[in-house]
Every structure is written in C-alpha cells, then in structure tokens.
Length: 104
Image 1: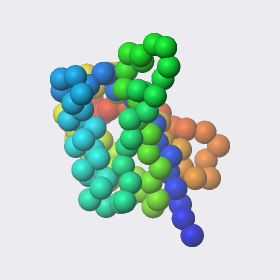
Image 2: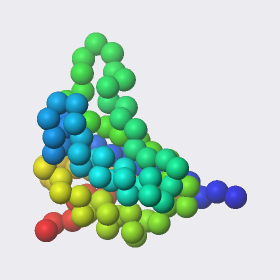
Image 3: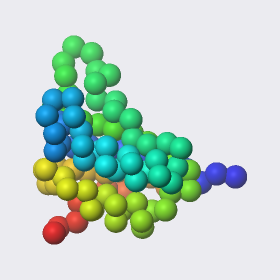
Image 4: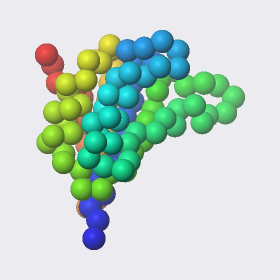
C-alpha cells in the first residue's frame, strides 16, 4: 500500500544562490532525502523556445510526514519568501492545496 503526496514547488530563479545554485531547495531536498528515497526535481528548464522566469520543481513522496515537512519548508531561509509557493495534493484529494511560507 502507498499514500503518495504530489508536490509542485515554485520559487524565484536560483532563490538564495547564484546562477545554477539553488541552496534553499537543496536544503529542503536534504530534509526529504533523510527520510525518503525521493526529492524535488527541477522541471522549469525543460521548456522550449523561451526560458521560464521562475524555478519549478516537482516531487511525489510516499508517506510524507506532512506537518514535519511543512515545518521544514517554513524553516528554509528563502531569499524571496513572498515568491515561494508549494502546491500539495494528497493521494485521495481532488485538488492541490496552496502552501505559502509562514510569516516570520
């Protein structure tokens, strides 16, 4: 049996880093990989003619510890927290839920 949570994460380009660096998402991926065999994968560079003006990542995590993950998501030192959006869809849900970085 599995209980998969689908996630789409959108951030500013290279949030927290220089071109090619994504330290904020890397920090979140370290948290995920410490508990699961999967993490966020960058998909925004898979476009054609024009480059996207934001980074988009996707992940599907089995048995996600949702409360702990959202706490880890909020603990990341996002450079542009107002631009970070996480869409989270639980396996039996009809639609995604929008999670934004908690105000500090």
